[in-house]
Image (cartoon, rainbow, N blue to C red; front, side, top):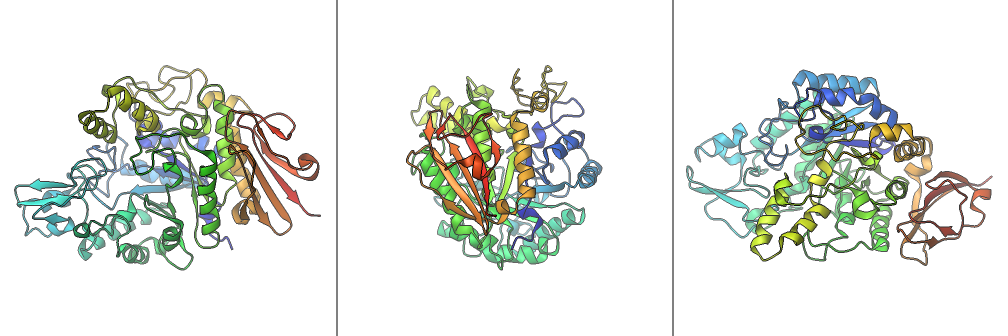
Length: 534
C-alpha cells in the first residue's frame, strides 16, 4: 500500500551555483531560486533537492563542507535559506538538503583541530594510520595523505582536501545527528545523503562500500534524526544491487526512503574499467537492468528514477540525439522512465532539453575529477584528443553549465561573468519552452500530472513485454481492471511493434509524435496507453 508522500512525488534537483544569479556576481544563489519558484510550481514538482549550499572551499564544488550549520556567502544568508523553505512551502514544495557525512573539508574546524595533535578530542573524528595501505582515492592516487604535525596519514576516499570521518567514533556520530536535527527543525523536507554507502568502511580490510556496520549506523541515524519527521531520505549508493537496496529501503528496515543506484548509468563504459572508457549503449541491456530493479524492488523497497544529476552528462547528448532529434529523443527518454514505479528526479534543464557543453582544451574544464583523470592518463600514454573525448562525453561540467532561461547575453542566468560559460542557444531556453505548447517542458509537466492522477503509475506491478528489435523497449504496469502499456523506440532508426487497435480500445495518455499510432515506429517515437476493463 502506497502511503508516503514521497512515493507520489516528483523531485527536481537544483545545482544552486548554476541555477539563477540574483546579485550579478556570476554565481547562482538562494534568492535566485526563490525568484524561480513559480516556474517550478508551474512544472508541478513536489520537492527541490539542493546540491550543497554550506560554506566550502569548493575544492569539489561544495561537496567538501567546512561548516555544516552555515550558508556559503556566495549563496546568501541563513535568512535567505529560511525564506526559501517558507516560500517553497507556500507553493506546496519541500526543500531537500544535500548532505555529506562521509567526509568533511580539510578546512572544517573539526579537521583543523584533529591534525594539531593526537590528543585532540577531534583527532579521532577522522581515520588515521601510521602507514598507508593500497587503498586508492576515487579521484585517483593514494587515499592517504601524511600530516607531519601528528606523524600519521589520514584517509580520504576522494580528494586529499576531503578527509573521511570516523563513523566508529560515537561522539562524532552524535555531532552529526545534532547537526541533522538542526536542519530538520527548520522544516526541510529531507536529505539526499552523498556516498552514504561508504560510512561503514573498514580501511584496514580494504572495505570501502557496504561495510559490515553500515546498516547499524543508518538505523541509529534514523532513530536519532529523520525517523522523527515526515521527510524523504535518499542515499547515493554506487555499490548497490537490488538485494542491497532492500536493506536500505525495505518497509521494516527503518533506514532510508530509497537509494540512488547506478547500475544503468554504468552501461556505456567498458566492463571492468572506469567511466572514461567508453562503449556504445545497448538499449536492450538498459531495459533489462531497469526492469530487474522494477521487479526485484516491487513490494520490497522503493526505486529512484533518474537520467541526470550534477555528476552525470546530459542524457540527451548521452543516450538520445542532441542534433536532429533533440526534443523527440528527450521526450522518449522522459516517457520511458516516468511510467516506472519509483520517485522520479528531474535535473535542472532536463525539462527544456539542455545538452552537453564540449570543450577544446583542459584549460576550459573546472571539474577536479576530470583534471585528475586527465593528468594521470596523460602520463600513462593517452593522447590529449582521447582524454578530451572522454571528458566531453562523461565530464561532470556538462551538467553544471548555467541554466538557460532566455535568449539574452548570458541566457538570463546572470548579467555578470558566469562561473562556468553559458551554453547560449537560439533553440534551448525556458522562454522558448514555455511559448511552445508542444515543447519538452510540457511533456514533463504532463508526466508529473499523470503520476498524481493515476494510481497505476505508483502502485501497478511491472512486467516486460518482449520485442523482436533490440531498440524497441516495451513494458506494462498492471492493477486489477487496468493495464498501462509503454512503448519506446530507443533509436533514430525505424522500429516496429504491434498493439491491436491501440487507440480504439485504450486511451493514449501521452505520445511524442502528433500522428496516429501505427505498427511502424518513427525515430525515438514513444507513447503510453491505458486500457480499462468495463
